Amino acid sequence: MFRPWLVILALLAKHSQRDAVLVASAGHEICSAANHSPCSAKQTYPKLVRHDGVQVGHVQSINLTDGQVLHLITKSLRPLLFEIPKFLSAEECEHIIKLASNAGLFQSTTLPDIDDEKALTDQEKKEDCLQLFGSDENHNGKVSVWELGVFLNQTYGISLNNADIEMMLTTTNFDRDGDGEISLNECMEGDHVVLDRYMNNIVEEHPQQRTRLSQQTWLQMSGTSDSVLRDLQDRVIQITKLPRIFVERSEDLQVVQYGVHGHYHAHYDSTVKNDPSLPCCMGSKYSAKCSQCRFLTVLYYLNDVPRGGETAFPVADEEHFNETEFEEKDLSNLSTHCYDANVVIRPRRGTAIMWYNHMISNMSGLLGPQDEHSLHGGCDVLEGHKWIANNWINAPIEWKDHL
Ligand code: OGA
Ligand code: CA
Ligand code: FE2
Image (cartoon, rainbow, N blue to C red; front, side, top):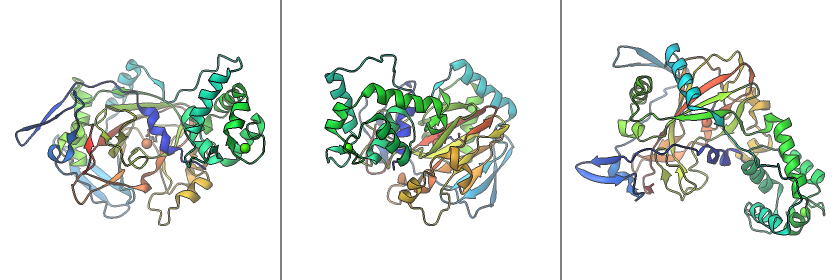
């Protein structure tokens, strides 16, 4: 089995470039986002803070500067997850949907082009096979069902279980000797056009198996002249009680629209666990050379969904979370396993949910270990549309520079 959430976030990487920000701390110029010189996280940032969830069902009130009172309802402790009703007004929700529609939405995942149905040349096949063998993680010269799952997820944005993959190998005749793996020879002898057609067919015919089926766009938050987005950012600072700098240096607002069958299978918003050796991408400067260090997620529901579209946290507060078992049971597929999740939240217009993807490091007060219970996703929309927006609050890792 494979871990689809490991590769999803790489698909979210289309950002608008933001202007350079100069940050001064204690009178020193620390770093410039423009010249790509690494910055020392310790010097630049104050300490992170996390709320106290107390216990599931606990409600804490937060007084906003405009006199409004918001209620944080604890939904789980691992991850620490809150539901916050009435975070946005109906007008604010409408406004954000309108901004996103005007900006233009694009597919959250893209598929390889199969217009060209001609048989590939040996050179093209070789390139394909080399790419495939990039996922030969244990370097044994064969691509296993698990490794193939990771590859197909990255290439086609589709989650297949072991049985699906074995069926694909048989049908496309890529495993000629029947040992359940693809050797380099088998790859070179296989018909790549047949494989491509087979995969595209799955994607078209079975949208449920796509890791993510939605459209999205990005709205600039920091420095915006839009008063709704400015107020929203201020409210995020007040509700999280985080020092302003973390919020202001975070990614733009991601607005997502799902139609019927739209979903996002279970994943982690933070990609630190994938490759802990990488520094953090800060703000919207995403690249393959840095991790998405998303300390906190604030997700807003922008409309009432007639049916479906819940946000599921499959392993929230799970005492014995076994990743292998989880994968074997295909529980990250929320089209089929939405209601097996430990916490399931119904989308309601104006409600926000907020959770911590990471602990805080005792040493530095900055980004600590990723919370493996923060796995989550969006269940299938069964009727109507679903609009959400994601605010990811980034934070750097203590002992590493960030980009
Ligand atoms: C996301 C996400 C959940 C939902 O966009 O990263 O987890 O309910 N969405 O749509
Ligand atoms: Ca084989
Ligand atoms: Fe997410």
